Length: 155
Image (spheres, one colour):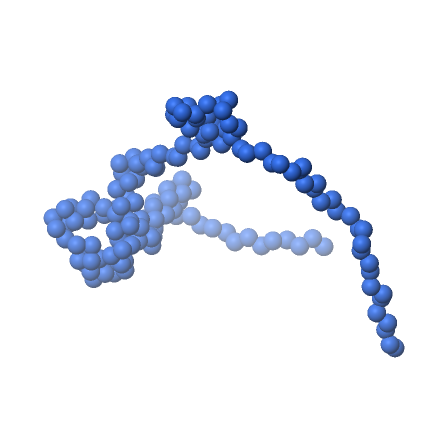
């Protein structure tokens, strides 16, 4: 036998559109009361906080005022948030200019050579030559390798 699902009957006192609108409004009200991060809150009240700082209040005094109103924040964190918000409001200041890539060694040597008027390419090579023959590269080999006897296992 197939199992049937019981469904309860709903007696709506309003239309579905009104119900949808009512739920959307309730959701908007909830979002406005929703717990926020301290950063979001400081961002929302940035203008009055900035005015307080311009009028001579210290960060710790402002933090004490906020703490009395239930917003726990340290003076260091407050200063960091204020700087970050100021940077965002002025359009995100550009980062430091990136470093120029280091020139490769040949280009650097050419630049030094060009700046030194006593330097002549024909007079001396850049590096002294070696009197001995180049050393041979060690190749991996098994010559001279001996293995040990396997251990005897006493049973």
